[in-house]
Image 1 (tube, rainbow, N blue to C red):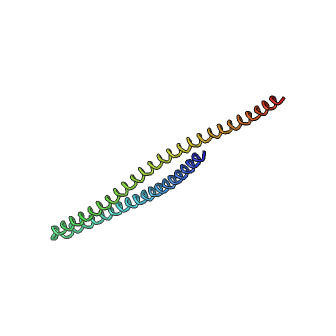
Image 2 (image 1 turned 120 degrees about the vertical axis):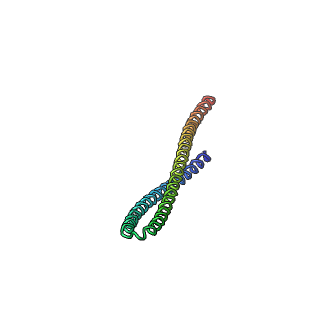
Image 3 (image 1 turned 60 degrees about the vertical axis):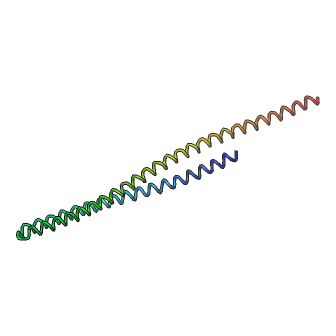
Length: 158
């Protein structure tokens, strides 16, 4: 009986720990979502910057026909750098998405484990209730047996 109560306490402690871990994972998931939104904003801002730079570069090409070849080199360099920035931002965004997926997977695993612990907890509670009922029935039977023994003793004396 005591072992069951100790096991129940241990299971409840584990459940509390898992619930805290789940809260931590959910918080990490929210943080990752915010980071992902910031990365999306950064990419959009870089896209606007790239468009602005390309527009200025096109105007320079039209105005300065003598240095068109040099302008094309500059444009290619700027595009390459802009592409590198976009690639870096995309890589960061992908890493954040992967982190969010891992956090989601971890949260799901913790939820599953919590469900298992809750089921074990419920089973232990049902078992404890059944044992309490059996104990009460035994105590009632013992009272009846004592009363019957007293009656038999009284009948034997009489």
